[in-house]
Image 1 (tube, one colour):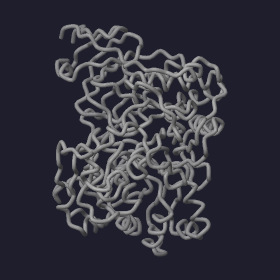
Image 2 (tube, chains in turn yellow, green):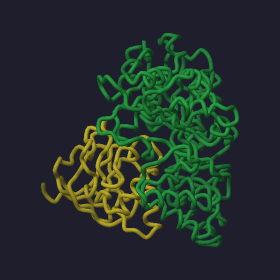
Image 3 (cartoon, one colour):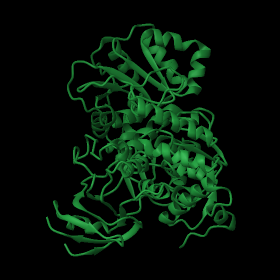
Image 4 (tube, helix red, strand yellow):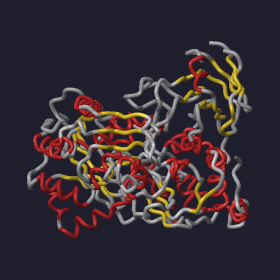
Length: 140
Length: 419
């Protein structure tokens, strides 16, 4: 994968970690354990995996309007993803990062990328995202 | 287009009315930028989903607003908290969590919110007029407010709801704009048997299917011969908003912005039509259950969204003075509790073995006994969706009558199924 420039949705610190490309949309509330970052929704194909420390590619979010609270809690307790990559701004989710910044807490960067860029990310790829939104593969 | 703030809004954001109000306005404005909203619009009311404890961070946020001297500037009701402050039921939260949850609920009261503590505020006297802009949180309340009341709200998440309530403004975006409220697709249920459509399970089952088909889109349900009643629309919306990102639906001939199909579609052709077959309804019902073949149930939970007085009357009628064999949780708000006390229903329900849960619910806070392979029966599409992840129980979905019969015998009885 070549470097891809993402568009910054919410500013934050540069991130580095394994890519986790979700195969299906997820509801953060009820779908992700706010204490650990583990995917708790038994109907989700990646049930049991953890989003903590990952460069998380989200094909979409569904369900409850409490997604932002779960993300804020993950930022506060150190189990947030290393970076978030979305197709389109999801205000409900990203609000968790906006509020974290108002609280004075350090947040992962969130960027937007085109839908067709998602499948080009290899499973097990290790990615770095700079604070200006450049996504680089750094090996598997 | 860049976001344009008025002088008043800019002054608010820079701290003219205190740091708490400034923080609220900055959160509203930053979110508006993210959404691409050109301006902020005044709101008439808010429903606040942010007072449910998910961890210490939410409590610290609310207390920072309090420290900054913030107060809500419009009517603001509160969604459920993590504690039953009425004492009807007892939670199993560890001491630290209980203390932080209580601090959080107190902070939201201090900000000036009403202690309604319900996910069905629209049945507790908070019904904004058709066409007014409001900022509501809690996915089922949002969908009911838009669809059944015809007021205009987006799906406000925690923090943005209270921030809008304090600022008195919301981003001009999404479902606040009339052009985004027309239906894009048709969800035709006319091929289903009238007997199924008249049954209680039809609405949560079809809602669950609708949510999966809809994604973010606004749709219109056709083929409904008569108004199914407010509790049925409540169940449909809650299920739809659990399985999809549904903020608004129309039912032709029933909901306020859909006097007929053509008006709901805004005079345009639908982008797609989903003709619901009996097979689709059957599959949707099966998908609500996760427990598989079981020969016992360990608990029943109903009341997501919170039960109305009418639903409690139906529950009492179905129990008919019998004694329940398994724990049975009926979740509701103070508005219904007051009615139950007044008409004397509460004593009979509790004598039969019903645990009334007020101010909160069993899927958002630990009230039920932990059970590694427990089986929970429910008539709620929303509970069916969230209970496995949040409680660890597997779910069997059935009608209220089936829930009651199963609770009396202790084994799952499923008399009512999709055709």
